[in-house]
Length: 258
Ligand code: NAP
Image (cartoon, rainbow, N blue to C red):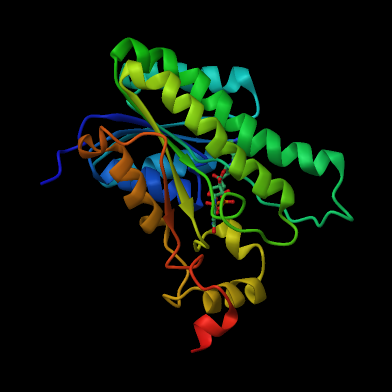
């Protein structure tokens, strides 16, 4: 029923661990040629090596999504290695917590720079290739936090993640005539190294707030990204897909307890 993605090329930012690693491994398993990207070269190379060891094709590059020249080097690395850029997963993100009474200007700037400006810079670096090919898929990793929900400590994060969706809607209109779609996955709480860093108490409370009773897996998010990359999703653009085990549904604690 589903067309194969085998042979497509995909860049995944923030793919040395967590959700990005899950996306990279899954696209690799589908036969895509994967460029793994993170600031730490060794970590990105380990993911590329995992894909290669499983019979896939992958390269790695160290690049910081907040730096325009790094994003241009990333796109060039994909051109050099694979000859084209079919799919961009703009996934790199950070989520340091700070409530408004403690948040500094540099806290705010760091989150917006990575999550929102980083999305813009990654997309900007890849669209000339996609336009020339008259096809391309851009998949953003946003969040339920910001677009749908709020959580104390994450006003800057929520703004960055909601901002990605505002960016997406206009980008989708601008790029549609060129055969390029732009969509976003909105994960709930996904079991990643980054999430584990928020502490076991946070993780336990989050599990209890999800109707399905578990955190999401990185594969849950990778499957949504695969859908947006598929030929079958060719007519879907500017849309967001919540993947959260029902986390945003309960209107109160009573809804979960009953
Ligand atoms: P993670 O485990 O902390 O991994 C983050 C990845 O991004 C790493 O590969 C990291 O590698 C890379 N990265 C961070 N800053 C970067 C930069 N400036 N340039 C390039 N790469 C950078 O995070 P995660 O939980 O997988 O989250 C991934 C994405 O999903 C983020 O956008 C996050 O907001 C979103 N998300 C996560 C959850 C969740 O529950 N986990 C929920 C909703 C949304 P380096 O440090 O080596 O650069």
